[in-house]
Every structure is written in C-alpha cells, then in structure tokens.
Amino acid sequence: MNNKKSHKQAAALKFAAVVIAAPRYIGAFGANIGIKALELVPGLAYAEMGSGFAMALLEGFALAFILGKLRLLNPASHQYKTLHRFAWGIALTLPVIGLPYLLSEQQGVSISSLFANGWLAFSLQVLWSLTTLIAPVLVVMAVGYADVDETERDAQLAEQAAIVRQVELEQEVAQAAQVATAKQKKLLIKQDIEQAASKPFACAACPKSFGTAKGLDGHQAHCPGRANGKQKVLIGEDTETTSRNL
Image (cartoon, rainbow, N blue to C red; front, side, top):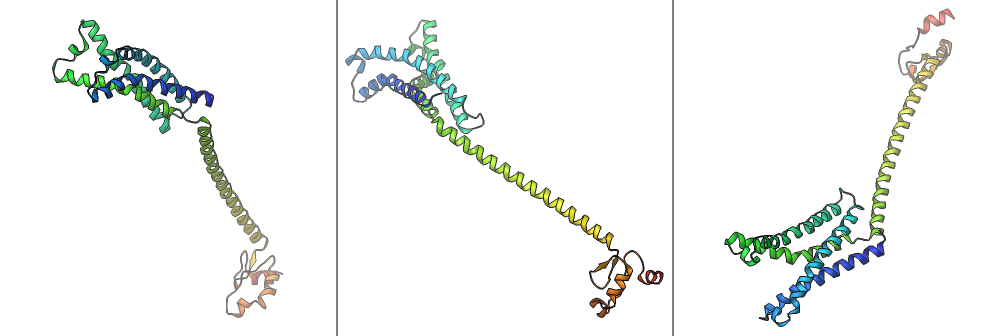
C-alpha cells in the first residue's frame, strides 16, 4: 500500500468520525447550559440520523483499512495484537448499537419504553448510549494506531533482521573456531605420536629423545640431568642390552 495514499485514507476516516460525532456533541454541550438543541436547531435531528448512515459506512471502511494493515504486521508482534483488539471492538459496536432499535421495531414500542423496566434495563440503556458515543472515538483511535509509516516499519524490520543475522554469523564464527581448535589439537597429538615413534629412545633425566640407542648413550655421557643424580630410563628397549648388541 502506497504510504501517501494510506495516510490520506486514514486522515479521511478520522475526519469522518469527528463529523459523525459532532451533532451529539452539539446537543450535549447545549444541554450543559440548559439549551434544548433539537428545539433550537430542528435540523440537528436530521443530522443525527444522517450521521448514523455515515457511521455505518465509516465502520466498514475503517475495518477494511485496519484489516489491510494487519496483513502487513507480524502476528506475534504487540502492534498486531493491539490492532486486532481494536478491529474486534469496532465490529462489536454495530450489533450493540443496532440491537435495541431492531427490538423496539419488532415489539412496536419506543426505545425509551424498551429500557423502562428495572435497573437491568436502565444499565443496558447506559451501555447502549456509551457505545453510541464511543464508536466514532474508537474508529479514530484504531485508524490512528494503524496509520503507521510503512517505510519506517520496513526499516525497523530490516534492522531487526540485520541484528538476527549478525548473531547468527557470530555463532557460526564461534563454531568454526571451535572446530579449527579441535582439528589443531588433533594435529598436535598426531605430531607428538609420530615424533615419539620416530625417536623411541628417550632420556629419563631430560626431555630429549633419540632415534638410536647409540645416540642416547652419547647424550647421557654429558646430560645435565644425569649430573644431578637422575637415573636413565629407556622407552622401547633397555639401553645396556642394545649397546651390547651393537
């Protein structure tokens, strides 16, 4: 949905909701100072009835606008859930407002007579009046909440995706480093084993090792470790026996 077109639609819906609410606000503010608005301005009654027709159109367009916005949002997001509640609230105002009128027509009585029996009926009348008053305000709130800048929203989603990708890359790098470290350790162990196999004659007095017994014998003649009193130990075979054989 084009951003400019979306903003214009939202502005038109909010303006229409204010216009629809205006006649009853005129009557309410007049009553506050003791003026009977319908007697002073007879046309106000026609404006009230006309606002009902406009309200039906407004709710339809507002719901279509909100549902279109819901399609663009992530169902798990807070914005989606809030706008979803707004949509249900607007949808429920129509039956709440229209039901008393239908019942009065079916029973052939006025709405005032319909609400004249007991405190429960009076409570329902208060609920009906409040719903009638709040319906345009609810539309303004819902459309205003839905009228977000899609470019800004896309930028936020792209930023969130970049953060997620960065975390994934860091995890991949860490895993690659762990694999490389493990391979390096294996290589060092293999080299140590190969080195030990190639030089099986080790001096027990120092870390040096030799490939032949003769080399070990020559080293031991001046090994600093033997000078300190350490004993000679061979890995693989006994030095003295090997020296005799040689």
